Amino acid sequence: MTNKNLQRQAIVEEQKKKQTRTFLIVGGVIIALVLVFVLSKLLTAFTPRSEFSLGDPNAPVKVNVFSDFRCSHCAEFAENQEDQFIKDYVDTGKVYYTFINHPFLAADSMDAAVAASCAAQQGKFKEYSRELFSRYTEPNAFTAANLGAYAQTLGLDMDKFNACSADSATRSYINKGMLFGGKQGVTGTPSFLVNGKVVYSNALIQTVEAELAK
Image (cartoon, rainbow, N blue to C red; front, side, top):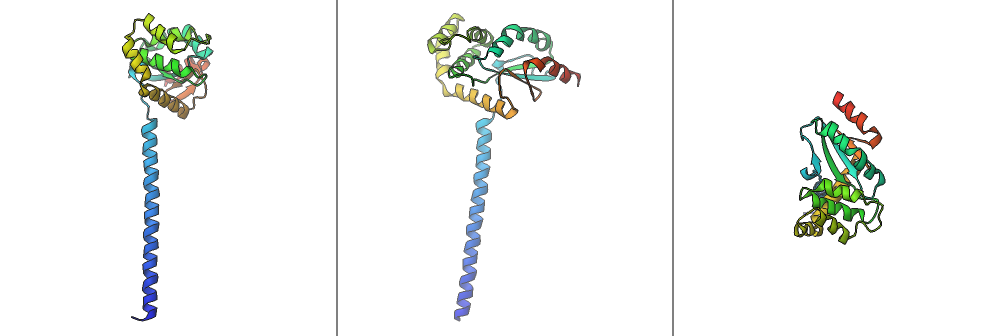
């Protein structure tokens, strides 16, 4: 074989190697992107749990309320407006209503959200959350000792409550709820997601009525 043929063959082989390397690199990048996409979906997937919900899951309007237990407007809504909203829309089968923790205002907002989630596991979410909202101005209201005391007052099983509070899955669920809210456009509390549309409390009723009229 002549030198020219050998050179030509060497060039062809080198080109094949480059093509193979390019293929492997591109393929690796595509696989990595797919894995990142799949993992991001798995990590941020969020399905509200039934213990945070009231009403008929098949109701024509779905309302998610995003709330922080240190939020004054959240406390005002819970104490002065929520019961009437539930009576008018949830109890009548028009709205499926779900609470989603969105603890972003203070360091102990997350501690309160965890405790409320653990109360929800024992069917006492509303009672426990109202206790927290009634104390949102108190600096030490959400210490571990006080959060446990509120649970005891409501007659919760403290072994289950404490185990739930220490379980990283509880915080993980709350964090996923916050990510979900952020993706929907939630930037403050209380915010209401009405059939996919984010509104504040001053527009809640009219938005629900508009959805019911569709």
